[in-house]
Image (cartoon, rainbow, N blue to C red; front, side, top):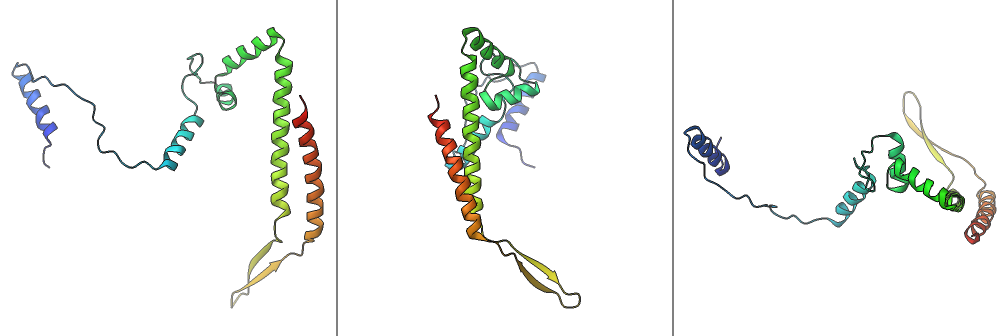
Length: 176
């Protein structure tokens, strides 16, 4: 195995130290190496992963976040459980907690309704399911099984549900 220049330099320094001589002093300068082309998608993904990963310390109070509730509060609000308690306590003292709570509940309802609307739209446009079964003992064959589904009835039900959900969504968005 061949030695690198750095290994040779380290051996020379060790030899100088063993003989009682002062080794050559060096100044280390940061070296980043060859820069590779960065893929924007990969860098965006790594940024998102860093944001989603809970850090060891809270950004607000610099306390160690090692409780299970810290993990939950980090994903919801971006700080530890203790900071959330302080925030809610401050709102209660100022008399603003009920309004904040109502806004959170309203936002959760709107989010739930939007998810339901999306799920119904996907369900409405679904085709009838089909399965392929392996039949036959000596000579294997594929048998196609297709269910008869009344797509017009499904679309009517989906449209009716979407209408109700959209009405509720408008009412919630217009509340203040």
